[in-house]
Amino acid sequence: MELRNLRTFHAVAESLNLTKAAEQLGYSQPTITLQIKALEKELGKPLLNRVGKRTFLTPTGKLLKTYTDRLFAVLREMEEELEKINNPHGTLTVATPEVYCTLYLPAIMSSYIKQHPLVKLQLISCNSLDSMRMVSENRADVGIISGSCDLPELKVDVIDREEFVLVTTPEIMAENDLESVLAKYPFISFQQNCNLDRFINSCLEEINYRPAHLIECSSEETVKRVVLKQVGVALLSTALIGKELEAGELVVLHRFSQRADTSLIYLKNRESEAAIQSFAELVRDSWRLIRDQDEA
Figure 1: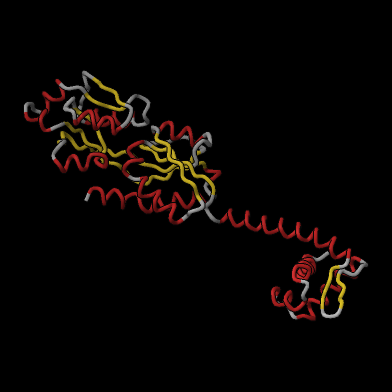
Figure 2: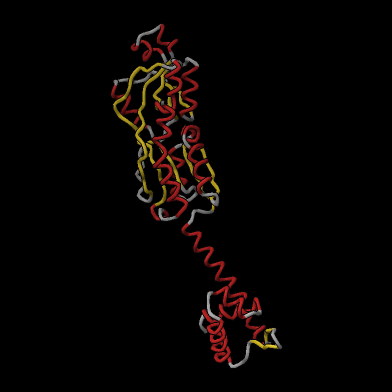
């Protein structure tokens, strides 16, 4: 049976009016009649009866309508699901360190849900290593990390290169020179295995600094808060402490020549998914704009 003829019959069976069915399908009434007759010939039984000016379904017509109802319901469902493939939908889980959750993601997520209201966003705050693990294991759809990523299954898009500085408070510097500060006060850093270990060590080698005392914290934000309490010195991203530097709450002891990559990560075999594609595109387009606005 031709789908075209079944669709015509279904339209006629719904309205029981050949003229309305013709208008709905964009056919002429003679075309409608020919298609119904072709279907009746194929089935070997009439589908419609006319009594006066009214049209009725025959028993065969009623039976066929029950099946065309189901057929075209399934086709509509199929078309809707196929359309979803091209339009972002479902849940998108983003795993990223706390600093990015605070500084960048609120604006990005707000813009994204306005553009793609069918997507439900979930944000998980974690360190960069956990972000890589979650994306690699399909527990998160997208990650934003600081530092390098060598996992072969992940697509890595570098979206920024962060400047890092060694800082302390002006109160500490008021009573000491740089050499005394580095000798007397502890170095406040992230916990080991934070994905920036190699970068941090390389930066400290740049100034030949080997901290005698170390305080480890769970996140950059915690490191910043501890430094502001006049506890010691820390290596922090200028994106995180721009306001504190401008307000004079922190002072720069050294600006490092090296920069740390900020990267967007997702599984290579999922990069064609509409939700991931659209989110990645928005992040790439807006990340540095948000950073520059915060620094202005």
